[in-house]
Length: 326
Image (cartoon, rainbow, N blue to C red; front, top):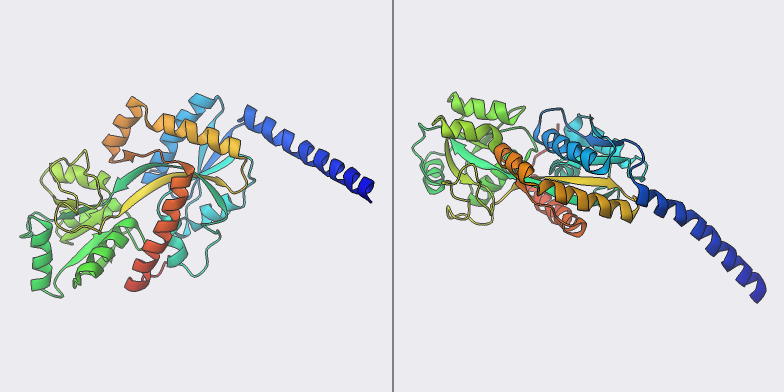
């Protein structure tokens, strides 16, 4: 029996070694062919922009093409479902925004498990939300705005880029935390939401900075706060929400790189190293700043921790505000 057991263990060890060697060899020579980067949203949005900038530089650095494939629909669920079922060989990646942690609470059924189906690589960049108002509104600070809304219940509403977007959820967090009578008006994009405020149809907006900053500089919008812990380079005179006197109401849209669960750790490590290197390049930092992004370059562990924290945080906001996906 001892001899049989030793022979079995020896054979099993040899089989395991035979299985592992090609994986290690593949990781060391990665990539050998083009790599698909799934973006679960339409072209030209912030997730797509971030993904294309990163993919272009990865192509330069690693010698094989990293190409973006847009798979929009169902608030990102279609693309995320496809990415979750991809082979864990490093040849399919996905770039996601914070909808990745919002969708599990927003929809009854989603085609991916945010805890198990992906290996976090890095949070590449973040973009904070900006609280803006039409210049005709008699509010020059967040405190002014809060007082105005409380003195006129049922009067004011705010625009966001759509149901379940970071702008919507940050707006709901603001409304719920302060007990404000404030109605949400969803649009189909940040540009449309900002356009509504500029035109005077909606007095308040919570959105990403990219469409808001030019309007602020032109005097067509007034920015009251950056909804993050760190100020925005493009709006240096605008306080953070904590500096405005309302800590704990921060909310950012982050953009991160994921690989399917089971992707060899050597490939995940290589991708992490290269993406962090890319986002820190001087020319890339200039591009990020111009687009309203802040580079991060987290570790995979930090990304996993953020996912766990934000699943809980935004799940609570969605349940309290009774938000449902469409």
